[in-house]
Length: 298
Image (cartoon, rainbow, N blue to C red):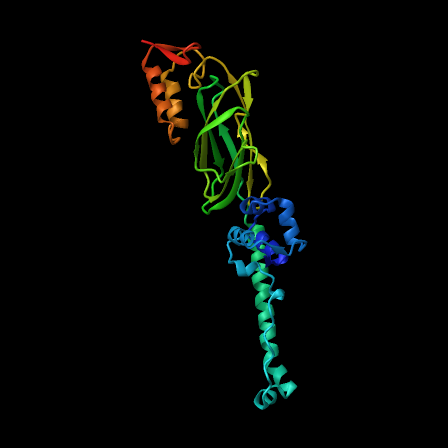
């Protein structure tokens, strides 16, 4: 166990514009736990949690430890020479007060600059938008792409969470998620990156009763509020390939171009792209409910 300084942790977090949610996800604890640490209700924590917390704050572990818990240095024996040096209070004051005033003035100038910088620098407007087909065939794969919107010249911290429908199997994810929820129904990414940036995954869902699924997710930024991922939120099951957007049993030129534009960069999705090309080169297709395959019309 180690002793941490809650005030230092809170100050470092606020200076970097990080939220308690960001730290909680990085350390793999709850936001209530972060709040208790900052308010010194849990002054002792596991060392491994301390290391993860320091890493999330971009500092060394020693910088978040409680210095008052350290063993004080033993007093040094005074010598005749040291006593003679501290005699003469008037002379000592004359030497030290200009340094005190200069240090105080310099600190005030630096503090004023920091306050002015952060108040005058507008926060980038970040968001997230989900692109996905509006329909799919039960038991067949389909892609989902989430793009972080906004633009910045520097890296910013993000937490992206996507809820996965029940009975869904995740086939591919890019980039690799930071973790999954305990119920295996969430994809989570925590990263410090430049925007715009793209995240994607491929699902295979077997529906038994309902004929639609819902996709929901949230994005949180350092220093910002959590907001919902915009874009497609409802997908219906049917008998048409997801790339056949107008459900006419043909993959047209515009439809295959849209596939390449939106989904071709997904890693591990090459077989599905090859199938779409085969359908596009034919005169049409039919979904065979008996064989669970596409019958391509030549």
